[in-house]
Image (cartoon, rainbow, N blue to C red):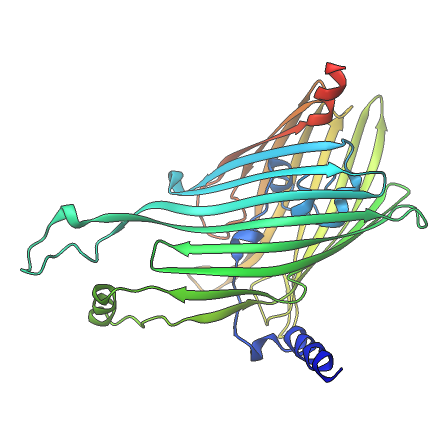
Length: 365
């Protein structure tokens, strides 16, 4: 009995006081904050309450209950900075019955073919370009998702993610991580309300380093700190959103969504901020015709930036997109967006593909 009590106390302390067990990072696992799917990116990531397909596993796992197909498969590929960094996603979802849906998602953000020049100079002090090798720096995540739709309360559903993380920097360093997301979603009279608590128990990454004597020597000569094995913690983030679905008549409809990303790790450069809470609002809208074609737009990344004369001005990012559904089977979405980047990098063209697998089965029959 005492052993069980000790385990329970340790678990509660891990949730309540994560900084006591590892180093809390203000910006950790940021590749999981970029957003995915061209529809969501075009609408400035306002998907917490309106995601209704396999990508809901990422935006809000509770929204998986809004899937209109029994099986769904989605793929996305995007690139940063003229193709230097690759951002890939693949997901599959299965509607078990009218109350339960499961999904598996894979996300990778990586930079490949990075030159390793630590062995460029041989023991005689000569430069030998044949000694250059290449490595990749990649962040990987697997999401195992489940959503449950309550029959007793119409329109209410809950869901959760189990996240398994693997981050590597060549053979020099690597980490394994684990985290949980918890979401809730409610629909009533055309209104959609959702909330997703990401990293609900604080997500951890256990880092280990494998540095050769030569690499350590290079670090010392260049004045860099030699890294040590450590535990990195990602604090919880609350995403909340509300949306209104409106029928315009003659097959036309519109959706208007407003989301807030709430962080609790101190002041950030967001529109609403304090020493404890920072809130980043973003707005998205979609106009569609009979679920065949849709045009989308979004406003996000509202920040205050200083000019050369020191005066502050409010800046924002506008995203655009379009979606086409072919024979209710294949959906192709396009977004003109900065992929969640807050810098002045050029916009990117993002395409994503979604397939309703059960439609093929019906046609075969």
